[in-house]
Image 1 (tube, rainbow, N blue to C red):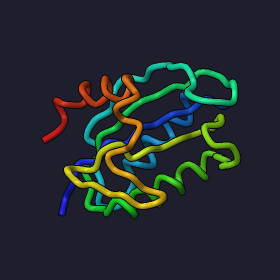
Image 2 (image 1 turned 90 degrees about the vertical axis):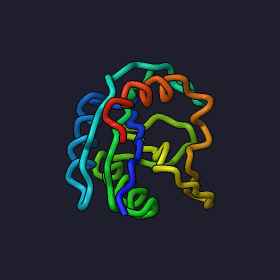
Image 3 (image 1 turned 45 degrees about the horizontal axis):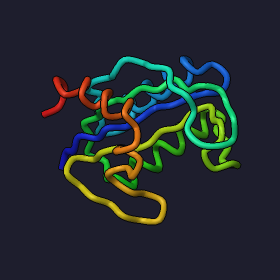
Image 4 (image 1 turned 30 degrees about the vertical axis):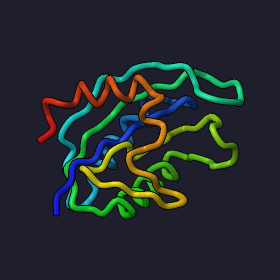
Length: 137
């Protein structure tokens, strides 16, 4: 079954634009997945401690046959390829990929919650999703 997934991309270390480009390429190359749309890239202040640089953020819309868990595993592999280290919660990162929405599905597992619980708190995610509406079904 094909679903539409909104994936948030963020980076605030190193070549931020380069890491977002890497994520777009790798997400588009996933099996049984097509990249249907990309929002504009925007710079936002970091959320939460510790003090850190601003983020570059972008939302992509994927049409995928992957299950949410498989997409999450793929996102983690892409983050690792970009040198992401998971050491400090809310800490700086080369690349952060979050599944924000996955069709009408709801998932509530310890390491995967869809819709993403921070969606109501991140106005930039809401703007980026609106920007992608022309590409959605």
